Amino acid sequence: MAKRPSNARIFIDYRNKKNPVKFQYPTNEDAYRATRKSITSFWISINGYLFILFLIFSVLANTFLGFQVYIPNKYYTYFAIYLFLTPYILSLFVYKNDKIVSLLPKLNKFSVLFPFGKSRYLCVKKLNRRTLKIEYFNNIFFDYKATNEFSKYLERVEITEYKFKFITKRFWIKKKKNNDLMWKAIFYFKRIPKRGKLEVIYK
Image (cartoon, rainbow, N blue to C red; front, side, top):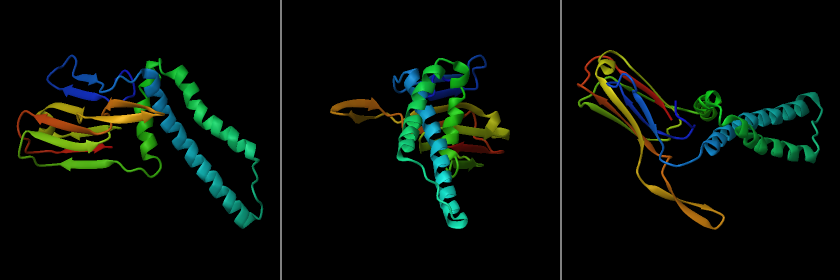
């Protein structure tokens, strides 16, 4: 498992029976910040949809039941504080706990798919070369399943970022940051598979 829930380069070598999976990171983002970003995304997604459901309920109650839900303005302020501060506090208690941190990639996947998010799907049944390249995705999650000769001949899988830098600006300070948003994956086969298939679900 990766040491932190950041977008990571992943190298899977099925020929290496003892240590087939290795991780590398394109940025030096610390564990706390990476954890906070994951928790914040999940937290805002859940509470955002709950708030939308509450607004829908308020409209329906007013339309069909004849009463209006009234909330004093100060409670909106409390909600905003609760919404944005809670991830910071939770992250302080979580980022050193390996068991909890290992679950954060699943929360990231849930955040982008719930409730109407779409993943990308690829099913390959025929290849004319010993490699398969998948380009331009965000590396939020990447799941694959190979059958028959696609599984038998699969030797390596590499997920790496495109090599470029972009400029970030915070207040008046500009910094160059390694790309960790655009990724590609390459499957390497010992021989060209003729039977079976490779299915990939990713985002």
